[in-house]
Image 1 (cartoon, rainbow, N blue to C red):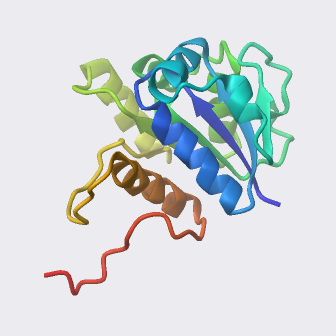
Image 2 (image 1 turned 90 degrees about the horizontal axis):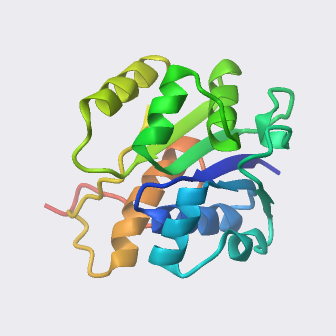
Image 3 (image 1 turned 60 degrees about the horizontal axis):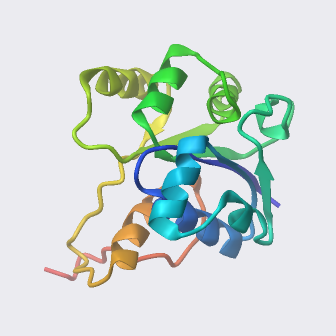
Length: 189
């Protein structure tokens, strides 16, 4: 079974991370879930969930963000993809600077050093110049920068459809077959 690390950090947008976890479970992926302290606050505020609630889902292993000996921190662990969703500006800055002071940043740096798929989903607006520079630098290194910027050409009528738009793009980048959201056919115009 394919395995992914999903980190939910302190940017608003925990709902994107939760929906991503649900979609990956549906696709049969094993998930190593990391939730930072600030990520847990937003998870509660936005979703009324705790990290432990998500850790109880089938296929999810909750890893402690301060455990640098966890499986997600090892380059020898064969993990297929790493997604930071949402990615706070602080987390983006740390990763770009090579700072691995917690499991979320360490696992992202492991993905980079092992040349594995790493997707960062920033959700802040506007972006500070240091964060823009960090994202540009990481993009040049092969990291996928996928802002949580939903489109509206599919005429969403619910928040869930807006969230699914972004989650579908993440799944596409991972090569995951899914039915999340509508695909453009070209016949819409």
